[in-house]
Length: 466
Image (cartoon, rainbow, N blue to C red; front, side, top):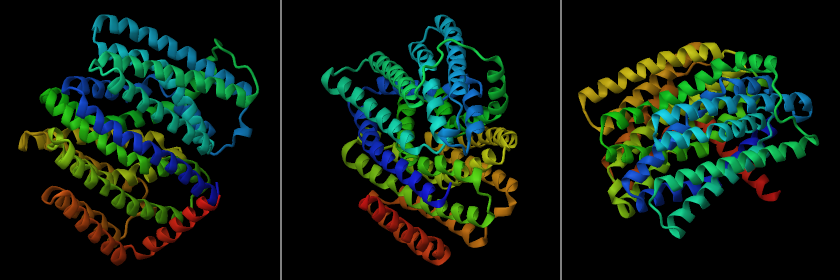
């Protein structure tokens, strides 16, 4: 993939995510404002469970992702694709049946709802990963836009038309929507390939091959999710429902960062599969670092809304800034290092290092809570955990090690960001942080800053012309 295609991919997904941001912002503020704390907590618990559903394809989807990385759609054998899809479909039906039996024993409404989403979500994940691996970013961005927009419509219909506070209705609507999206993707891919796919065939060799290649990556991805989400598990089981609801609200605001992160992390895998120039990788890493320190400033508008419109969640503002500051390290980890692990076929090393990070993260969270038994303690533990994981990644890619000015920039931003967010109101804090960031960029990362400004202007101008 050339620079032009990389830029185009980033822009496509970025514009899709900006659209998603509008829906996400409205959803994230409207649901907690109009729903009871108990109903909102149930929805966030369901979403937390759903975050781990990818573990249940056993690495099959990630094996396909690695196998097709860097290919074009024209390179894919349509019969092989049909067999691959049918095998996954068969596997997920078996897994769903097993979980239905388990849920009959567990008898928890939220867990039962999660069980019913296993099949459609993992099938949809297959198509998402297929589009990503082949650089089909336009199709991927359309899929993401559609998913977010329809979810928003469902939430608003239930919230304002049906005026219901019943968590079961929300979960049921999410399940139906997941099946509609999956079926739509099946129909789309059949038309795209111009062939009828097998429905109930099963290829044992295909199954074992993709699971073997992808299991360590799946475990790594899910471990990554566990790593970044362990603080919520601590809050859920160690504190009250109101604490979990407020912490989950802060996490939902943190997800806005993905609007900026996803376009970069998704497109760079395909790019790294075809490019291994160390100087270019180092430049891209610095661009990502600058991007991260600018993007996390969206926490200030979020705090502004809390200060004037949603006072019952105002206590979440401290958690928001602590969690956002960890993104300074997560941006680089997920965009650069994780993609390098995948592109260099080092997923086993990635998994091992992540397990070490999880153990360290558990320790950080426990120690921080013992020192200060409050919600914010887990957010502080998340910062320490992110730094630890970042250090482990650096040790595996010493050829792109950091320079002193780059390290000073990272940690100075971490400190000043939290001071501005925790000690000042939203407007004053925002102005101080942005001013400091621009000065630091100019003093420490001037060439990278000027390149990004020039490149950004060119891309926007090109997009407007076309």
